[in-house]
Image (cartoon, rainbow, N blue to C red; front, side):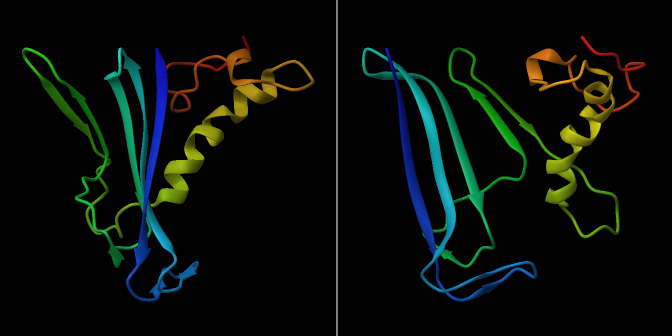
Length: 137
């Protein structure tokens, strides 16, 4: 019947130095937001998202690393997809994680006809070379 969006923000409780940016005390350093699809006023599907920069914020929401998928029912199902980093690494490299879909799309985009290319004009983008040669749709 309807799609509902809601957002809450967290403020930095002190100055946060991230190395690539600084967040001053009182500025937004987290957002917990999401969409829900509702039928007869009841949420039947929800997509909650939590993004934070550092952990010096109020409120502090409980977090889990990765993506959590939950299906309520009989029986209920809960699954978590988590990135696992090599031993000795510094942990998450969100720049790499964010860039990989675009990097893996390069070959398909170059093979596409000239002009503007939309995602639906390309084959499914997967890890380069895993499923075989890439060709334009």
